[in-house]
Length: 315
Length: 245
Image (tube, rainbow over all chains, first blue to last red):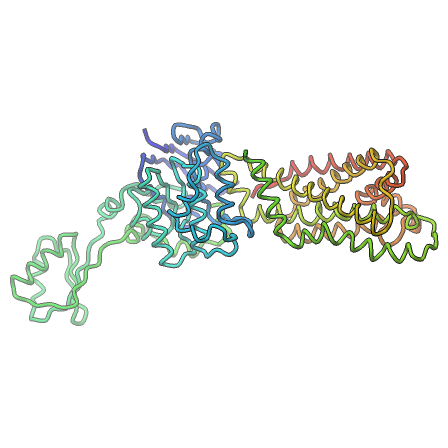
């Protein structure tokens, strides 16, 4: 049985349609990504899943329960980390965990959780004295303190530096390894690519695609690019004649060959066969960014940049 | 421990870590009493009118304690909780965010009572004022005054668009109320209309009923009723208009 089932979900705020016929399922034990630019309807979708908002149409089942009707039971079993949520300045790390722990039937071991999240040294530190990454980790810890079966993590790494972001990614993988199903809301392609088993791409309230990261890449058929600088004479038509190659071009000394994944192997074999030495070889793989552009006709980062910041909360 | 007792325990700790609120509750009222009370008593002019009553200043000090908690501390704390999405965060747990509001009110009430007791003891020994003579009347007046002022504080918390707004609405309301209560100009020297408004204003009615009971008289029933009515109206409106995010 799927852990989360969303069917034909609709939600509007006044005239503005936030979620328009969204359907997806999340399976036990996977990291499921909800990906899209700010204002695409990601947060509204997961808020309906959490029972924080009532859908205008469609159905939502979480662990077989209705998040509105069985809200207390759903909240016992689903941990959430909210975008931009804070704690009182003078509340200390351990006190916050101890408080939130008292809300749940199932209680995690606080010292273990602190150690897992690398907060043991900060256990008596007040919230306002924590760094951005520590605050974020505490927020995740609070989402896990009730030993949830599902954890919904919204914009987990926004505002973190690259190191903090990588640490947080490791953390998400450890959460999944504990057997918790993770729903990860993000607008970072790199994050989704690295972490998610499957992901749904949402744009302007609609699902554009649901697939594994590699499935999405194959689906949009984005090509690999092989760049190199030949050190010996090379006839471009040798490469162009290869069945995998879709294009050969030169820019100064550099040759660029495009084609599907196998193109690299064919190019290297051909170069070896004709005894052409080369330098500065690099391969550009297609990224989810490319897939997103190809699926929506827009660039996720750019779409995010043009969103007014006030729209963020209703997204 | 269940969620509510835990919330109350945590909110108490947070309150005690805030030196400003502690100062408001435990130091400022006694300080004001000493500043205003000692010279007046020393001069012993026996002036008539509101300020001549020996129980006026102690009653004002108690009203001040409650008023500052209800109109400054409470709306600001709730405004910050909403702004920082603490209430929203709580809504994702099995606990209703309303419990945090209950915990806040309980903590501020307990601090208010504690502050009032400290102030009353201070008055008793520093100003040599006798203890309240009509105890049941005094308790009733105190409870209704607290309920009325806290209801107004909750209404501010409900309507203020931001924590910053709550922080300015509180004082903006507090000082006119203090004036109406006769803190500066005794009500017997005010124009009649203003004085009548003052009699039934939240702080004015609280001060009068407390002062009367302190002196051993019965607090005026119409004033008690107005306090109760304001308390009910304020709470109903606050509940109706409270925004969680």
